[in-house]
Length: 153
Image 1 (cartoon, rainbow, N blue to C red):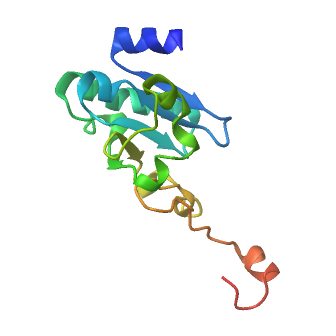
Image 2 (image 1 turned 120 degrees about the vertical axis):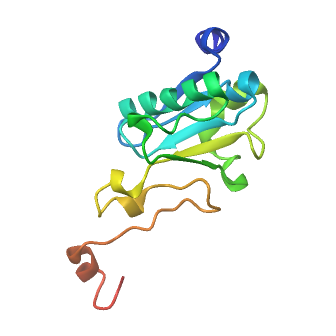
Image 3 (image 1 turned 135 degrees about the horizontal axis):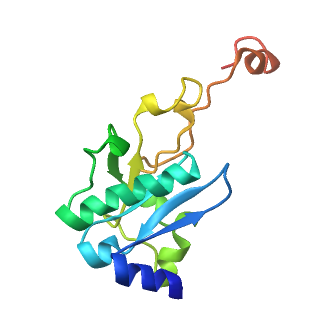
């Protein structure tokens, strides 16, 4: 918590990374507190890219008050408010520790990459926290469909 506090004091925000390479997500702490802007969360992309992407967007918030979505790294990216259903989830433990409670509606936005950032077989598997349910639509391949039996999706 000391390192997080120091980063927030020096930069105005900190990036918290959670999970391993296959299930990692990152979110900011401090944007609401220091800039009056919702904090950000990014999921389902490479961990190193998450860190660079979320910091680039946060730099824009710190300098202009708006997410930096006009830079090469952020081209096509959108920020969407996290649905209330996901604010009580496992995602925001460090945020809750710092502020004494989970984010309220309007205090967290998901960074959503454009569909073209993913191959055709994975773009449907991206979790969307701006929707009431984030369960991705899994596209089964031919062998998976056959194993479920004829006519199954």
